[in-house]
Every structure is written in C-alpha cells, then in structure tokens.
Image (tube, rainbow, N blue to C red; front, side, top):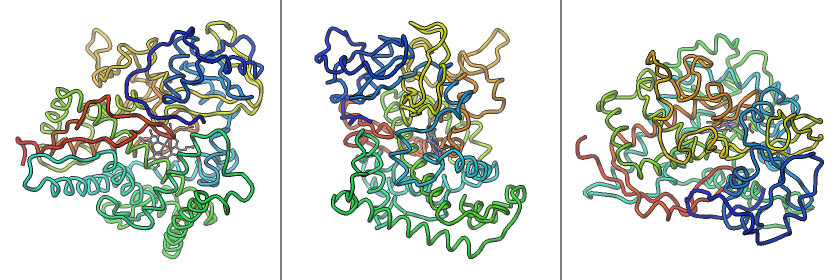
Length: 529
Ligand code: HEM
C-alpha cells in the first residue's frame, strides 16, 4: 500500500522513537476512532527507505501487538497477536472483507476467490476446495517431479564440462512454478523453463502490474481513460487479453469434452490413467456446477496468480537460508540420500522427507508470502483484549482497515525462541517426558496427521497460509510442490550464494522477493552421479 523500496536482508532493528525525522506522520495519526489503542510514531523516511513490514515490526516491538498507524487521512490497525488474528480470520471472519486488496485485485482476478464478494465466494469456495482432493494431490506429485526434472536438466546442460555454473535461482524457480501451476490448474504447459512465448510474457506483464498496484495507495488505474491513455495501462490490458484468450480457449476445449459426473466419483477417478488431471477438468466435469465461462476464467486466473509467485518465493528463500547454513544443507542432503537414494520421489516418500518439509515451513516462517493479510471491518467489532492499553478489547468501527502482520507473528520474540534464526529443527523438539515428537510449543493433536505444521497446531502463531474460511485453498499443493522441487535440486547440486547475503536486496509487493535475483553458484554433487 506504500511503495516499498529495496533494502538489504538485514534484520529489522528496534528504533529509538527520538530518531523520528518528521512530525508529519504524528500529525496525521489522529484519524480513526479506535479508543485507547497505542499509536505508532515512526519516521516517514522509514516507509520509503525499506520494506514496509520492517517498520511495522519495529512499531510492534515498541507499541505492542495491536496498534494504530495512519497514512494521509487514513488509519490502519496493525495486528501481531495470535488471538486477535484468530478472531479476525476465523471466529469473526464474515465481519471482514479484503478491503483495499479487493480493489487492487478485482480488475485482474474479477470474481475469483481472493477478491470475490461474499456471495460469490461462498458458491465458488464450495466448488473449488473439493477439487484439491487427496488423489489430485497425489497425481500432482508426477507433475511436480517432471517439471522439477526439466529444471534440473537445464542446469545440468549449463554445467556441461564445467565445475560450477552461476544462475539466478529466483528466475528459475519462477519459471518452474509457472509451468507447474499451468499444468496443475488448467493442463497447459507454459514450458517456461526452456522457452519464452507471448503468453508467458503476458503473464509476467500482468503479474508485474498486479505487484505495482499492490504497492500504491492511489488507485491510479481507476482514473478516467487511464486504460486508453496511459501506456503502461494499455500494455496491461493487452497482456490481460492474451492471457484471457488463452484461458478462454482452454475452457472451450474442456467444455467440448465435458463428461459430467458427481463430485464423489470425480474424486475417485483413476488418476494414473488420466491425461488431464487438472483442476479445470474437475470443475468442468462436476455435475450441477453450470458455472459461466467468465467466472471459470476468473477462478483460473486467481489460482494462476495466487499459486505462482508465492511458491517461487518460498523456494528462493529456502535456498537463500540453506546457502548460509551449509551444515543444514548437508543434513537435508543426507535425508534425501537415505529416503530416496537416486530413486524416484513418490507421494509416500514425501512423508519420510521430514527435514525437507520443515525447511519449507521454516522458510515460510521467516519469509511469509504475503507478509501481511489485509482486511476491512464490515461492521463494528471488538478485538480481543489483554493488550497494552486495553484489557477489555479495542472497539473498532465499521470500515476499519486492518493489517494482520504475519511477518510480526512469525518473528515475534514473545512466541518464538531465537525468532530470527533459521532453525527448521525448532518444530521438532520432544514435547514431553514420554519422548513424543511434536512441534515446538505447539499441539500436534489439534491437527492429527498434518504433514506440515500449520495454524491450527500453533493456534494462529504460525500462519503461512492464513486461517479460517479464507485460508489458502492451495496450501497442500504448494507445500508438496516446494518439498519436491527442493528435494530434487539438493539431490543433484551443492548451492552457494555468489556474493554475500547482505548483497541480496529485498523488495516487497505481494510477496517478498529479491531486487536483482538470487544469484547462486551451483556445483554437481561429487558424491552422486
Ligand atoms: C489464499 C498463501 C499457494 C490459491 C491464500 C492466503 C495466503 C496464501 C496467506 C490467504 C490470504 C488472506 O487470508 O487474505 C499462499 C502461499 C503459497 C500459496 C504462501 C505458496 C507457498 C497457492 C496455490 C494456489 C493458491 C498453489 C492454487 C493452486 C489461493 C486461493 C486463495 C489463497 C484461491 C483464496 C482463498 C479464499 O479466499 O477462499 N494463499 N498460497 N495459493 N490462495 Fe494461496
């Protein structure tokens, strides 16, 4: 919402409020009617010199886990407390909508799940969630593996005859995630790991604009005639048309070959013999869901955007963290060797890749995507109390804009030991004297059988996919995809950063990514063939 500029990956420091360079923000802080809530007083320069969520973290340490912040005439409430987050996201979820986020995303995603109004959301969530059923996820293991193998092959070809190769792994992960989402969601092979195409360019163009919009408070794209007069808006609409034409063609094809069946039967299909295991196929074949093409296209576009950069970012930061912790990289490789050897990955084997799975979630803890969840209250509410300044809870009026700072929750010194350290093992301490393994400080019995620590086990201290009814619908898809891609990369290569970690500058929009790429040096592992 504020333009977030690049900075180094250094950890946020607690600021001295006396450093404040400007009274401007302080003067603007009177907006809103939020009772005795603490008010953040920060230097405006903070907002323009480094990612926004770093400043939100410093103010959290200074003011507590619920505070008010204002920009211009507008006040925001920043939440870094698990109980308040649980209240907003789960217990009282339908008293909130996506507020400013919906304004930004609606022109791109239409009535897709993320920006959809409540009525549309209810209908579509009921149809889309069952499409991510167990056999679908199992079938996706093949897609994740084949796409990852294409990336590995590409690196091997680049390495041919050389000891090491330098590569921007963020760009590689972005191509990989695009190929996977295309195949998984609508059975379309972008093939972006190895080629460029007008559709790929259009997807990146649209993503770039979506990101640009998410960093601006002023909705410049709504200005009259902007669509025709502003070159960047003209390009954006051209890109959207290329993607929409592609999606419309895929929807047409799927509808022409429709085989209508009950949901339960669709969920039990023999996926090993299916040529097209995609979500689109499921949604089109589902009996009783005569959705119009426009809605279907919005659904596909939403999943394309929601599932692409987020997963690429998880892989990017996992490698960034591992490269700085060679002993943890070795530990991960030892696990891969023990579980897989040089064999193939299967759904069952993922269950044994415990350490890799914890690396993925620990990367999401340190670099949550997105770092903030955005909500606006639809009616007056009272946020749970017990905080500095208000024991009974804060009354908030209708229309209050809220940031649930996942970044703050995930790095809260009140919730985690060594919050800024990369310690995948933190989730795996013995919980009691009986030697039961569980996730540190959490209660695995709340979510029995979960392959990955989640918001239920942590009681909303760990929220990588949000929580409550609007929780990510693709969480298991993304976690498995990341686990497989990381496993296959580490199975073949040792990875180190080309420069120092401080040189990897950090930028945020919808996700946290690097300014100039994650440049790494890759070497084929000498102990494997
Ligand atoms: C929602 C994170 C991958 C589809 C969300 C939300 C988060 C999130 C935090 C909740 C947003 C909110 O409450 O405001 C992630 C991360 C991913 C990922 C970190 C990768 C590591 C995916 C994938 C798909 C997907 C692969 C689809 C294939 C969606 C959709 C929603 C959503 C449709 C909206 C759900 C609703 O409102 O009902 N995601 N996501 N995401 N995500 Fe994901």
